[in-house]
Length: 148
Ligand SMILES: [Zn+2]
Ligand SMILES: [Zn+2]
Image 1 (cartoon, rainbow, N blue to C red):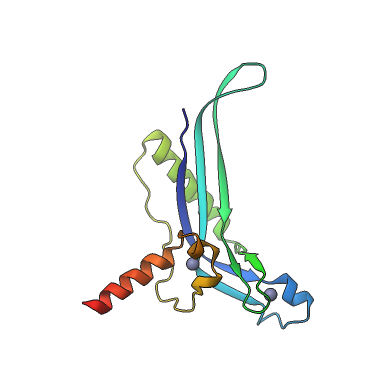
Image 2 (cartoon, rainbow, N blue to C red):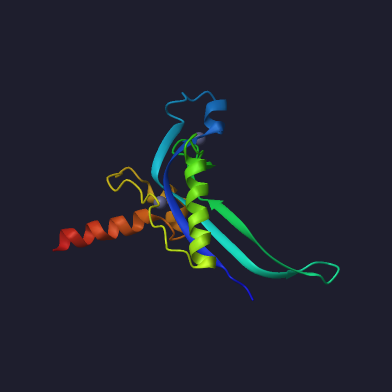
């Protein structure tokens, strides 16, 4: 029995290209933030058997922060969380697990991204390239609005 769930979370992340900073690029030009930063969670919960044949109920959670590419040097950078985000993220994750695995009422208050961020560079966003980015949805909605 395998439970495998995916979810993504959007937040305002800061990206800092260490490669550029080391090469002498001004910190301001080597730093950017993005409202469309995608974090993907995958959770597993179920029985597991250890090497002695003992079965356990347990699980694991994997987390992937999608990278964005530096405009100056094309290096892929993973966003940094600010001081408040980790707590918020853990709280959200807790509610998500309670809902998905234990049937608690859903908690749908995750940040969906600032919809006015028009500077998002699709071709430099790993989540856009792999189709996970919330920006793609926002963009499609905007295109549909123009059509009407
Ligand atoms: Zn760079
Ligand atoms: Zn994106």
